[in-house]
Image (cartoon, rainbow, N blue to C red; front, side, top):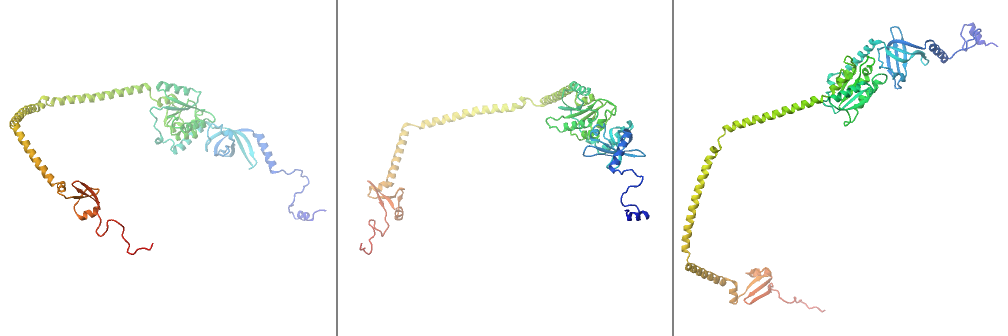
Length: 460
């Protein structure tokens, strides 16, 4: 039975709400993913690998390591992707505005219904594009002050250790070592790196940063970044931004010796000094040992001559002063004469003193007779005897002979001359003619012996 609603819709020209088979239609519907897969297969089978020339726009590298960009010309734009492994193989760092030739496979990205090119290899489109990229990067880094003269460091006069960043197998390192050996043998630290090709710029930058990160006891005093000559493509690693920034940020003075004299890289502008060749860099790094010795010998000779000149000039001045100084006899003559005069006067004075003393001795000897001395001795004895009799009469023992006594305190032995002194002393000694008697002083109103008698007798 036919649907009445469908019949009404057909009569009124209204579309059906549900999908229904139509007579003569045998095409089955496809999903969006199926269509995208078919388009992807068609595009990849039709074009395969292609080479595109265009200008880079919107270049960016994400955290996964892959890079995304757009290639454009004056009429069209195509998106591009470079997988992580291929980014590391590029010989330069892509930048917006650079004209390149990209080789890769055209495909589609179903997630956004876009076609794109998966780039396997990319080169700059000719030397003109390469130089344009170089000038653009140079202007950018110069604007940041990486090439400023005020940022240049002074090279050490005689470095103890020299670090060399170069290829370990090339002729450059042999030339540098040979020149250093000829001029002034110095301890050399070689950091081997690749100097061209994929990954060479990162190795050179890592070597410069590695020397700068060494401890003060082992780090070099000077670094030489060197490479032999070649084309601009061969030297392009030393134009990479990572190398230029590493050289500019290094705290060790750096000599750039990349290429021949006519070759110029951005590393030359960032370094503290540019050498035309690696051999010239070794010559700039150290002085000639023979010249240094000759210079030191010259300084020693000049110092010796200067010292001798001062000695000779002092000797001449001393000789001139000696000529104008008075003679020794002229200076010491008056003093010598005065000394002789005083000596003569001393002799005469001593003789006069001896004569006077001898006269006094003779007069004293005449007065010293034996009878006179006997009389003087007798008188002295009489005076001594009279004095002793007076002393005995005035002494305390004379009083004792007459029946008196005197009192002294015990134990000090001081004579007691009053009753108060005797009461104060308490213990005294009585001195008599024939001996001493110890006594004790009692206060008035007390009995010397026995205890006080009680007023009322006790019954006990």
